[in-house]
Image (cartoon, rainbow, N blue to C red; front, side):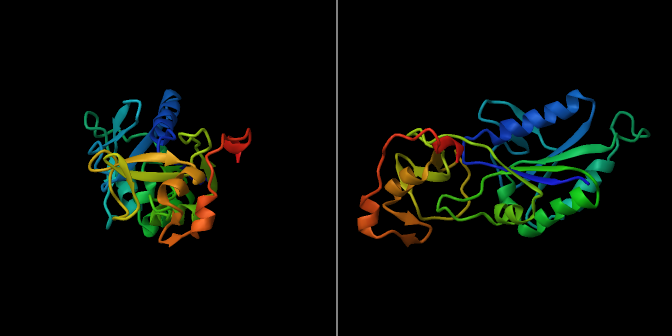
Amino acid sequence: MAKLYFRYGAMNSGKTTALLQAAFNYEERGQRVLLAKPGIDSKGADQVVSRLGVRRTVDFLIHPDDDVQELFRAAAQGAEALTPDIPLPRVACLLVDEAQFLTPAQVDSLLKIAVLDGVPVLAYGIRTDFQTKAFPGAGRLLELAHTLEELKTICRCGRKALFNGRRVGDRFVFDGSQVAIDGESVTYESLCAACYLEESQGRLGQGALPSAESSRLGTSKPTEGDLHD
């Protein structure tokens, strides 16, 4: 049975690069893949764009009210423009970038594509927003995916980064809408838990740590196991 995979990581962990590498690996072996991303991700318009500068046009965009399974089936059955009478090869894999922006119902459709259509689905995204709260799509993927794989990156202090700090200009902000696309009006920095709490003065989501506990947060160098936990 084909599976639904969720490959997640903090910002700058190479998720889009890994997606493009997976697509290349399939196609190098003569297999057909489809790429998709949510339409709300305006960065790159209809392309997925890695931080290394590699980009590729997706086969379809997913808007909030779209049925992902219908979009997938339409793209899978499409004919080659130059040879419309020759059917395209079977799709070997569906790759979805920025999957945290999907609705829970759309994630349900990804599972159905894997199980009912028999096509592996590789979804890439981040777990939590700048307030450490799960995106709806990411939360549903954590509930449904057959396999969870973490893509790791490091904080400025050298520890493993877990969270995504939002910056406006040269300062971190912890209030605002959940979705703000990187590079448009804000930027993001991957942070470990200690550095996040230091910048947020102990805030996690809408809560706050007691001031005494917040003051104990340190910036010591990471131990050998920090990047492997």
